[in-house]
Image (cartoon, rainbow, N blue to C red; front, side, top):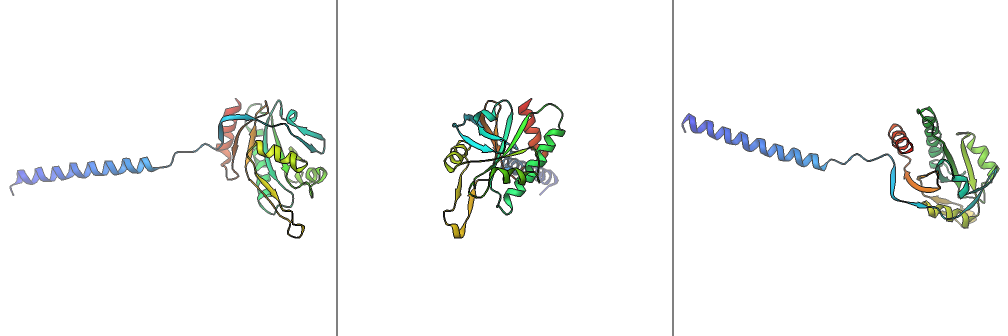
Length: 203
């Protein structure tokens, strides 16, 4: 093989190898997951069904949600780990939003789905350990179910008194100043990303 043919062959191999690597790189890039928003904003926000719950300061209804944004978390006081962890996150979120520039009127609500053991007084006392700005509410099972269903939350309280258990969805629900369910996020959220996403919606 003369030198001209050798050079031509090497050049062809280089072009083929380069094209192959480019295709592989494009394939890998296409497979990379898209960056997800911190908050799952609903494409079709929905109004809440009429409900009536109780707090230490009185009745908690749809009217209580008007005029400000509200972040709602469901749980119960005897929850061993998930609820305390989520409440601690809610407290940190409250502090982060307070520190963020701008006027953001946001209310935080913890709904107990275990009214048989969690009185409104006990709820209020318990929440003081996390953040005084978190309001505790509860109510009858039909009213709790009505409110929870509006937010896509599910819960179940065991009827077996000897093996008492409570199961519930773990999501933070976002309600706008018109009382409309607008979005939700999970407990494993990134604080800076969530604050940025949320405050962008408020402005």
